[in-house]
Image 1 (cartoon, rainbow, N blue to C red):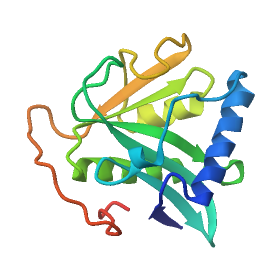
Image 2: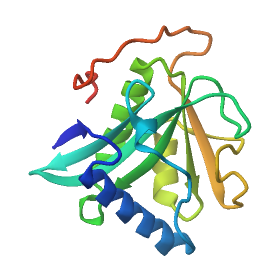
Image 3: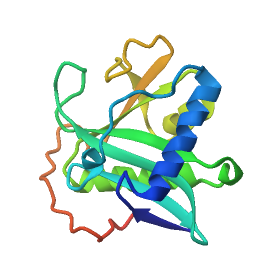
Length: 178
């Protein structure tokens, strides 16, 4: 299994995003997640989008994008997790945990201080994963904050009170955690 950094508009990323949208529709009805996303939001150094491959097949994905204090309730230094997904036939193998760890390492290397994410009440396995990885429920934030079934979670990327200088990332070079 290999984790690769790709653009959010890469054909494999587009395919996995369509699959996660169908998962949202199946679980919640409606039209899926309507959060406005642009490929540039996931471009280094202000984000990343990762796909786990096995034998050339994309099995799991996730990204992060930089957020700052503003009207949607983010804090300065936030890195927001988006589009975490594992194809059904690859679930239960720890791929989401590996993608999440790689996203955290990448965001930390980019100088971000907190990972934040949204999940819903109809995704108990996602809530369990994030909780087991140190995420805690926080006040709602983001585009979907008015949605009643939304759970917002956060995890510090640095020890409280510590200052982490922004580090430069070299495109194509992966943090050691990958």
